[in-house]
Amino acid sequence: MAIRACCLAVLVAASVAAVGEVERPIDETPLIAADPVLADVNELAVVLATGETPGVEGLIDATKLTAQVRQKLRDTGLTPVEQDSESIPKLLVQIEGTEVPDCDKYVYRVQTALCRLVTVPGQGNRQIQVDVWRVRPVMAVADKARAGETICNAVLVQAEVFAEAQRAARSLPAPKEDVNPPKLTPQTVAAVSGYPFIASKSSGVFHRPDCRWAQNITGDNRLGYKTREEAIQNGKRPCKSCKP
Image (cartoon, rainbow, N blue to C red; front, side, top):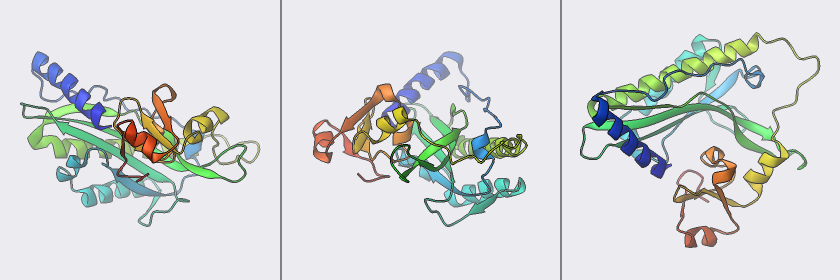
C-alpha cells in the first residue's frame, strides 16, 4: 500500500507539473449500483482505515469525520452503531496519502467498501470478513494546506454514494426464495486461505488472509507464505493492522 501511494505521488506530481493544475481527480465519477448484497443492511459500523499511511491521521479529525459519516447514514434510514463486532457489517473507509517531494502538493486515495461476514463454501459454518461492495476509488492531488479538507469531502461524498446505493437496493424486486448470506467462490477461497500469510508482490507488508488490506490484493499479484519467518526472510514486514 505504501509503495502504491509513493508511486501514485510521483505520477500525479508529473501531471501537476505538466498541466499546472492544483487539484485534478483521476476519476471523480462514483459508481452507484442497486446491488442486492446491500438490501438487508440496516445496522453498520463506520471504520476509518489509515493503517498503511498513518501520516493521513494528522490531516483529518477522525472523530468528527466519523460522526459526519454516521449522520449521513442516519439521514437515509440506516442505523450506525458505535460498538464494532464481527457480526455487524462495516462501512470501511480506506484513506491513503503522501506528500509530493519538493512540492507543496499532497496526493491521496479514498475508497469506501462494505465489509461483512460471508460463509466459506465447503468448510462448514466457517465465515470470514470480505469486502462485498465498493465505490470507485478517488485519487487526486491537492495543496497541502487543503489536503485534510479535500480528503474529508471525498469521504463524505462516498458515504452519500453508499447510502444511495443501499436505498436503491431496497427497491429491488423481492427474491422468489430465501437468499443466503453472500458466499465466496471456491477460487476466491483458495486465493484467500491457501496460506496462513499473504502479501502483494508490490508491497513490503504481509497480512493474515482475513485482513482488510489483504482483500485488496488480486490473485496475479498475491504471494503466500507458510510461516512468518518465510515472509520476513523474503523482505516483508508484519501488517500493523492485523498483526500476523
